[in-house]
Image (cartoon, rainbow, N blue to C red):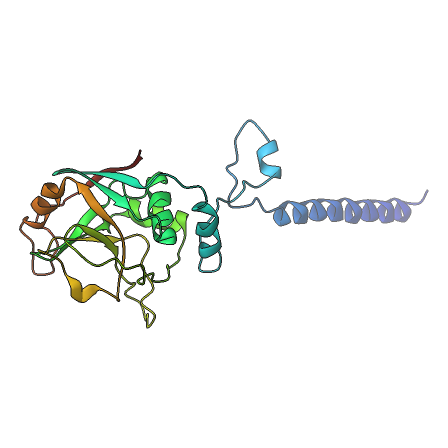
Length: 237
């Protein structure tokens, strides 16, 4: 065989092998591992299937979810333990969405480590929020949604009533912010709130703790000077 023939064969083999390497490199670049998967060093099985995303509440599914959740829901009491003591609220059975929401969030552990972030003297204490990353993460994992008002069940904002504030966003229908709540301390009540906010329960034990929270010093924005934590919220029988 002539030298030119050997040269031609060598060039052809070089081009072929180079093309194979390039094709392999392209395949490696195009293989994307799903972000939700944690890749373990000792296994390839977890790379092939992404983790299932947790259930997240939205504006579209929240009402249907709580409609189903409240069916057969017999528990209606929640004990809230704070850094100043504990008190117990009883939730109204005929305000089903707000009752179901409060119990669901309690069982999800949402209220734990949140604060009473707003205290208005001789008016209300408001809880369920905090300026920490943990609370923001909890909200993101549970979901973003609002609840419709339910103000026609005959309940008024008597002293000891637990009610739900409306969202601060553009909200002409006074939709409720599901993560927060307030408790009336006014004697005998704050009846100017009736019709605008949804009472969904009342304090049945530990009202002196609610008053103690309301007596704490606050800054100009009604935020307590010393943080008042909700250490634990639990559903009880």
